[in-house]
Image (cartoon, rainbow, N blue to C red; front, side, top):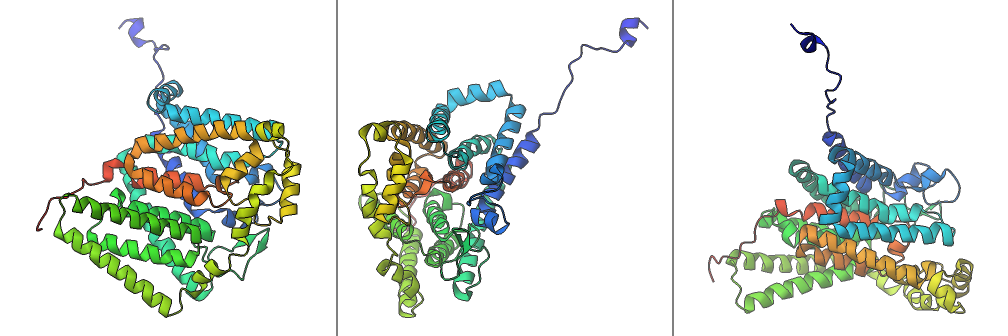
Length: 433
């Protein structure tokens, strides 16, 4: 036997198994932490996530670290060059959004001397998670679809339990103090308004293509059950907006039928039953006084409406150059104290201009628009109504101008629950007309 055949081959490449399993697991863990570990949970655990002091690392949400870790492992599994090339060709909007985030980070850290944790949790987290979710294979994505439907069923159940018993799964913190007088449920997402926002988004997905996977009776039950749970969370803007959008969707469907679109008698009967049940349950709740605490929020808003009017004076006395390039944050804070804006700037659009200036805000909003376009490219027009709902509701609060994981929640729900691989085709064939 020749020496060449017996000698070891030192030039044979070493094969390393690509860590697809690890990347998939980290992505699923990121989604779980995002939905189950709220900022209130972090505060209850003693971490100074939303308070002064403590380690700078404690200011970042754990889901942000996990999303970056999963993105890094996906880059190793796919290949950094291949991933970047694929994103440049197939998802150019993500790169535009990444550049917008870089600009906002520069404005935040270098110009305004502010912490970057808000940028990381609010925008870097959804960007990184978008890439990871897009890389998931069908079996894992199917498990996440089922998990999210179960999540909202459990979350609404907890909302009812907390509303009627006064017990709270997640303590409600404000300014580092536990709030005991607020009747609104906190459930799994930790804050009443976030619960209302997410549940409303789920309802819009459920009544659209994302609900086709369920039989009509189950879909009807989930709709009424989760819609009723929104009362326990007490979000006025989200509740009003989702009711208006659901009414608009129903009116559009009725107009399409009147215009000649074919329909099944079974579907028409189901719509009548759902509307009747909603009207009946709503009437019983009002007459029984169960909705009194919720309806009282429309009578006494604790100064929220006044804040939304006064906030436009936040720019009073500000130099035009500062407003264009970089507002004086001390001046903004002084105006807030003068206007008694204790609640804060109740619009993320106004807050962005007040914190970052006109140029940075407009450029960043362009990047944000590109990111939203990539979400729609992934799921189709079915994602338009949930996206519109999210920004309409968020525009009534500081929202994404503050440190929040709301955008990551929204993006994850739309990408998973409206994944076209798991949406049955629409059936409008008539059975009887």
